[in-house]
Each structure stands twice: as structure tokens, then as C-alpha cells.
Image 1 (cartoon, helix red, strand yellow):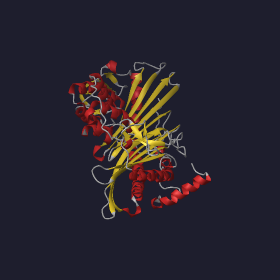
Image 2: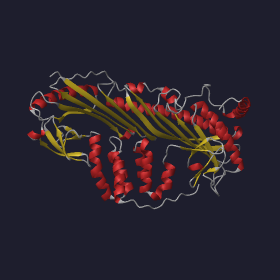
Image 3: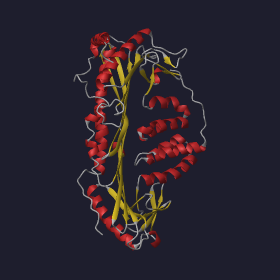
Length: 256
Length: 281
């Protein structure tokens, strides 16, 4: 299994879907581990009841159906499927609404979804915040720089039970990024990859869970964005410059 | 979340071999041995792995233009499709030697002098050698650790003016820092066609750069450029500043302040007002 994860770290992120299905067919007994540990770009379905899109992930899936955070219904319909408690569902509805505004402020477009469910082990709950943005010039990239651009963010927060007015929050965030530019003079330039970080905090619940979780996610996304900037552009640029420093060199063909 | 059951579909040997080949061929520059190690563990079948390796390694080595040292360390040979004499034999025209290699182990096992018929004619060699000298100088200046070679891929037996021939310049630079979780490779291939008794020179170039950074994640760059003459490749990076990222995610909202999470009530009111007035999405 460790070897399988090793392979996933080396294969080009653009080919991760192919790599994952290859691994699933070679190691069928590890399928649930592989699916939960390997990040794949987020898929989307349209909620037929309200015409809004929602993001698919393991946390709103049961069998082959996915629960919409807008209508709380499974697509395609499913009997005996799990739902969050009514209290949790209230929080989920509010989380989706507020997160949609947050998403619009930072992403100027895109799709978001939030899913909550009870944690069987503790008395707390788990929340999953997802964002999908297509920044390509044919998508929602306002400035038109990118021929292809995708940002997929998955934030999973485990919220512990309330203890003397505070709760413990454990956030695991993954951002998957892919961008391609293409122009006459510079050719095709393609960067893609993913980064994962964790953050743990104990916060007073006076402001509410949503507020606490929101602030953690905002801080984390900011850090990840900067990190990606440094890593994506920084490290890979460093590598290119190490291979061939950008000096002005004139190549002259021999006169013969 | 119910447990998903995956049917125990047994893959055929051929399918397993194809999957193994795919992983090997798609390894990042300089990492095929690491991928091979993980792959053997996952595959758990030495026979199939060996078959896949025999087929995949030569293709990978040629496409990545790997560089192998002569057994006596007197020089090195690049592995490309341009200087391949036989599936395990590669010509180094600069030293007029032929290297025998083991693709899977990625080593050069022996070296022998090249036979006359394996080398270009003296007329062609004159061009090749002069170009080679200039390229060596250039690569020495422009690349901290670049290896280059010039091969004749067409018309190597041309005896004198009047016929067309083609030379290929290959430049390969590799930086492997597995301890820093970073690897990269630069490959330039320039095809130069000499036409019509040197009245015309057609130059085509293809540059491919790959970089892989895998600490706390997996980030890969691949950039290709096909061109007609030298190009300042580094410009691509300066054209991709913050603004490109902005299309994906802004640093801050337009308000230039962090999102007011505690003021959700304010937002509900704003939304209601928007609905009433019919503004908004």
C-alpha cells in the first residue's frame, strides 16, 4: 500500500485518474484505502430539484448515489440512505449558504458544497467543505490568462465534543491545482499538482461552529495559496534556472 | 457510507504487463528506478515485471535522452533514437565509439571503436565535428551540467556537395535532488536540414522541460516549445505572476478584508434584500 502511494506521488497529477484505476485493478483488496487516500479532481452533479450544482465526494456518497446539500436528496434516489440529524442539517444548510458567499468573494465564481455528518466514535461531528473552480478563459477565468485552469479544494474538519465552552477542531486540507498557458512565443506551459496540510485548534464555541470552521479554512486556504505560489512557481522555476540559467547566450552556427 | 464491493476481476498477464509498462513509461525524469521499486512491490510478480521492464526501459531512456558513463569513465554517451545502431548499441560520434548498454539497469556495459560504416563520411563528419565543437562551447557556457551531441540522421554517406543531409543537435541537462524532493530535466532537440548544396538551412527545435517537486504533495511542470529559432524560455515564468493565480483564487476578497464569518446574519439580511429587490444571481 505504501508502494502504491509512492507511485501516486510520482505519476504526473494529470494522469492520476488513470494511475488510480490501474492501482485499483492491481490491488482490489486495498480499494477502500486507495479511494480514501488518493485525491482525485472533484466531480459535479446537478440537483434536479433546484437546478443548482453540487460537488461529489466520499462524504455525501452512499452506494452509487450522492446527496445534494441543497435539497438533501440522493441522486439517483436511494432507499435506506443515511442522512444527517435535523439539527446537523440546519447547520449544514447555513454552512452551504455562507460558504457560497465566501466562495464568491474569493473565487469570483466556482461551485461549493458543504456536508456534515455525525461522528460515530466521538460525540462531535465531521464537516467537509468543497470548492471547485474552473479558471480557464472558456470557464470562469475573468482575466483570460489560462487556457486551462482548475482549483479543487477539499477541507475536512473533525469537530470534537464541547468541553467547557471549547471544542477541538482538526482540519485536513487538500488543494489540487492545474494550469496551462499556451501562446505563440512561449509554447505550452503546464503546471499541476496537489498539496495537503493539517491544522489543529481549540476554539471557544461562543461564536459558533461555523465561524470557527470558516476562519480556519480561510487561514488555511490563504497559506496554501501562498505555498502553492512558492512551490509551483518557486521550486519548479528554481529547477528550470538550475538546469539552464537565463543568461543571454547567442548561438552562432559555424560558417562552412 | 456503505462499503463498496469491488468484484475480484482477475487481470490477465498481458493486462498486468501493460499497466506495469504504463507506470514505467510515465515516470518523471530521473525517477524510473524509484517507480520500478514501488511497482515491483505492487505487482508482486517478477516475471511480468521483467517483461514490462524489457519493453519500457529502452523507450523511456530514449525519450528522456539519458546519459550513461563509459565503463572506464573516459566519457559518456547519450541514449536517443538518433544514434541508435541496434537496440542495445549507441554511437558516440565525438569519440567514434559504440557503447553497449543495459537499458533496465541504465548502465553502459562496454565500449568498442566504431566501424567505418557506422560513422559518417569524412565530408559529413567535417560539418558534424565543427558544429559539435560550437555546441560544446555553447552548452559549457549556458548549462551548468549539460551534455550534448550532434548526430547525422540522414545522408551520412554523402560524399560531396549537391546532396541533402540532416544533422540533429541534442542537449540534455538533468538535475536530480531526491533528498530535496525535487528533480528536473531539460531536453532540447534541434533538427538542421542542409538542403540544395547549402543554399538553404532549415532549423526546427523542440524544447521540453520537466520538473517534479514532491515534498508534502506532488507538483509537476511540463513545458514544451517548438520553434524555429532560439527563444527566451524563461519569459514564460515572468508572464505567470499573481494575476494568473487570481483567475483561480484571489488573495483577498474585493473588500480587501478577511471574510466576516461572525456576521452571517448581516449576509442573510443582505440576501433577503437582494431577493426582494430582484438583484443578485
